[in-house]
Image 1 (cartoon, rainbow, N blue to C red):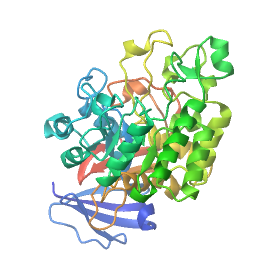
Image 2: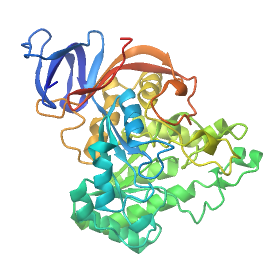
Image 3: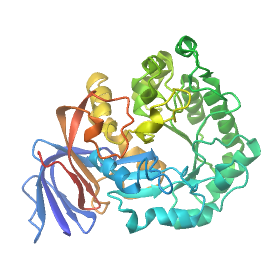
Length: 434
């Protein structure tokens, strides 16, 4: 198939300022033509998708996922993870480097991108900033970028040394890459497994203080300030505390290239949800206080947050069915993000649909410089999600595409049912029930 016509859908493209009924022709992996309904001439041999009554929008872009390959295919594979992405409306995912081995080489980056991996949607590897993500010697950023890496990070292993982080920011800026920081001062979180607060005290667990996150964000912003002349770009991953957001807000006022993302679980859940040691509510950064949760919501609504990212972190069932302290951090998120954002950000908190979609597509694509993604203008990548914005559905992990089922959102009511996901002109996900 080289051509596909989408007819009668309500096109919402925030980056292009389009919010109207349109027909769209996709050809050879690109958007070929956009016209008023009924005005497109049928392309020879083109397949047709009837999107009447549905929204069609740029395919979603998740800049923070863990696909677990190489090395941990029992949790997830690039094939299963990208199938889950397609089911959730995502057409591009940025894969973190904490694999086995760590993705700190051009060879591993290229291995992830090989057709043999069976990806359903486009994968953009993010490479390790330091060798083995040990926070010491820097990798060859130019070589990694040439191999396909779109940013660098030691995600899961924060860069603690000032000198190494300064060098990372400067070296990445020289080759046009962003630096993504997992903001956690691990000197303050040793032995901790949830947020420091009343719930941790009640459960007898050591808690992570909010200062472990905000302190490192403040340190990194100071380094960006010192490197103002090289225009370093710092992106704060999975922001979870009010203090960290306040630091990002001030950095932006000061004209610095500092951006941040928030995951759905951090704007919907609090540490109270841990309940009786429920490991499906264990992640890093941990679920925080109600005040922190409310700060995430406020920052999303007022535009401080640049992207919604899932931090999709699959684990095998047996790994989560242990004592809370021993369980690995992380939850799945690719199949629930759109449904949660539409249910809460749009329906409950009245954020315009276009702004919600921008946080899930145009803005994350721009953060990592993914040209041609996050918009449906003529000539852009033929990445499309088609969904019913009014449909309600209940999430059941057992019915999902991800290999892992570790989710805190089992049984939650979602809004916005994905009917089709089209990646570079090819239907990557289609709900036969539609």
